[in-house]
Length: 186
Image (tube, rainbow, N blue to C red; front, side):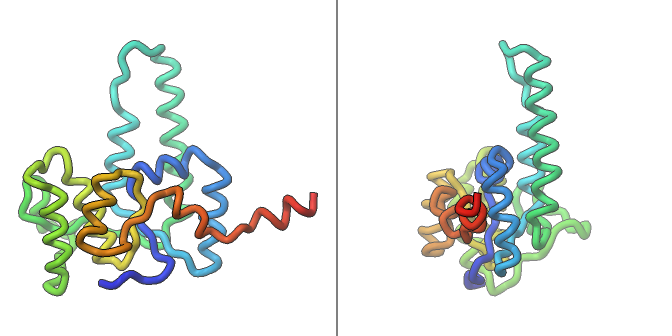
């Protein structure tokens, strides 16, 4: 599908930046009133959960648990607030991705180019790149621009679909400056 204006999907690294910056979160939320749309998939939730549960050696367990709890709370707050649409995973013929139990969407026949991009991102390494490939394919099929700071993913998406990936630093200036009117009135 061609890109739909102002429709975005965040890679997990971009989602983590939003969770860490309340001003960005507010600007993105307010942009929904100007027609911006934000799509999320199960992959971002799974990756975020994996990041929260990572074992961290050499750091005070109380500090780690607090950081994990804060990240989890931020994700629980941010995703439902920003989400315009939830997207299921697409069924693929890769290990762990072929189940047709109603939780996976079927890739439309017209999206062969997205499937080619998916294979290119995987590059034979399902363990390392499956989530990135799935986020990219979902973004393309749903008409989104993927916001990512993952250099490899950014390059692979734009190799197959010009201008369908954007870096977080280039995404934020697209947000209307809602806060400037408050800053000048103070």
